[in-house]
Length: 537
Image (cartoon, rainbow, N blue to C red; front, side):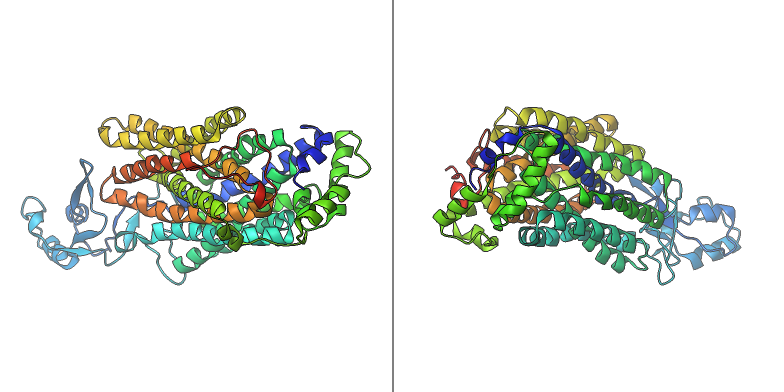
């Protein structure tokens, strides 16, 4: 079992089998790009002010009843208050003119008792402005906390999905979990489009997150185990992340064409239907089958791979060596591993703890910047597209660098770049918004590089018997960072630069932890717990 790469070396490093599997698995990640960040548009807050009912006010008082406030040096209408309607109605009836006969600063203010008027220049409707048959959502002012809370429920779903997907995948197989997760993601997004309340939207968003991260992790591990050593690096960097980015880049243009949130979600959910035929073309992981003692099935898949690659397979590929390996180890080939196995070994405990810190910090920065695109100056659809586009060169560069460069040095370098650039944003004056935007996109580039590196780095650290469990645990801890990311961005309502200072400081601090992890460059994937490398320091 420890010589899987040697036993299948006759397949070569390339060939039609590997390329077909590479592209078919990668298409799955496009759907995660569609469904991962639509909250950027669905939860965006349009310009709004208090709704003024028709009470026969003069034109002057209709314009003046909403107070003016200063935001970032610009005078705008108050979003959460108005002058008392009964007082203004009496003053209007008396023929008094605001500003000339009446000093507006002396008037008492009240909350928006009749609701809000929302600008429809960008969005026809979304969850902030939704008016359902049961209730008005109105997620502004006193209820504006509900938007970051809704975003967090997606990442809470990521947390649960990360915890259970590893166990399900190790127990029932990578392939089954991939397609079950696809179906669950499609159904969850579709049901979410029928939400009759904010609470239902949040509950369904939790299921969206759980199914989506389960799909991502299972497909990622399946590709890592099925593909050759050369193709594995291409898949885990340029492949999986680039195809995710394709979906992410396409999302703003779909949202641009569909400005109504229910229709948008229904359309996005239906994109998963096209993946049904892939069940007959994507193979199960032979590595996983071997750990379950299903040697004949693993051999059948490898022989089919040999046929497609037009090479001749030996008469016996695994059976003899695998049976001998299991006998020498004195364990049952069908044994399953859990998080308890991670806690038993000091070495695995320490490596896992350091991986958790890295994943947490990277997720805060990555998702914080991704969710912040609707708050940037300029067109939100273009900003989202630019944010997604900034990831493309990161994936290409990371693919080239990971072939030759040590993982530790790469990860630390781009953590410092991503965090350092965000710390510089606070020194950019408001008159240079494009400079701040460029720095934010540079920070997104650094976080994307770190994100792609930490995925393959973690997959290379864990042995096959614990890889899915380990990846699931790291992804679960990362969700703590993801869950807090919306609230980190929410701090920007109090101080515009506070989110950048917090994200930048955390990222640079986490780069120190990376120095204690072992290097995995040019090493075979470990198969057993005994083959896992020791931590340093």
